[in-house]
View (cartoon, rainbow, N blue to C red):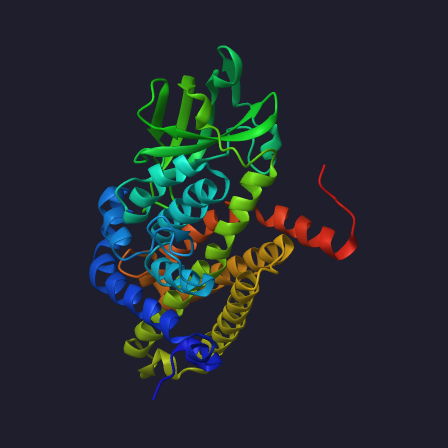
Length: 392
């Protein structure tokens, strides 16, 4: 009887009943309602993001690891397993949930005022409002301190308005968002702002012609004299520590999610190779195929053990940023290597949208880069190992 790839490391024994139930529910919904449509979404580059947000919010997946304000308050590992199952369908689906819950909602939950939390978090948790996280700029990616977006006070005293000017790029959920968490330079350092997207001067332009993350809304945002009230600023965040903490929160979803894509690739390759006859026998019966599958299962299993371990450290309140960087660096690399190898097992069939590995590989090329490039995470881990900062 064939063994599922992650059963080799007895993954279920590391999860509690609630975590297994959440995983199984997300997998069932993903297989029944999302997977049948994902190839078409990828081909057309169009995804019904608002409908998906409502559907995923109805399942309690948006901001699920946050507490209060309509959020489910699940364990970190439960959130990770939900990301794993969504990315097994497509990285774009996990990105929608990750940006909504771990970037936009987390920023408001951790750094916002009570009024901001009560106004935005319940509809965001329900999927009735979509959020985006506007940090990256055309000339400020790995070096967010180089951002040019600026916010100036205009008016008398402490109640003076804020006026924002700048451009943000590669913003997930940007054209469908109801609210943007925008980071900008101020006279008091880098601050975050809660910006309703119907505010005058705010515009979003979709980024097209993508070869990757086609099942995801990606935008350029322009802030042309966006005027906000004094209380639009996130009161508890000053400096780069705020946005970087949000990114660390979201990267944990990637640590789990990328392995969902890898698992789907391995399962797809096994199914295909079981049915494909080569030299008079199933492709799975050849030594080279089994060697490839064994190596990929070993890499996938060990990476999944790392993901769960990091999730437990997060739950215990002892997870360090360099550990998240290690997980993101290692697990996305593993996932991308697996996706590429699985494509070779599928041969020419692997280049069509009928099968998932090359689509996953294309997506993982973006996952490898966003929320910290490979090189940035190498330097974070290198600094932890040596005590010497190598950033310039």
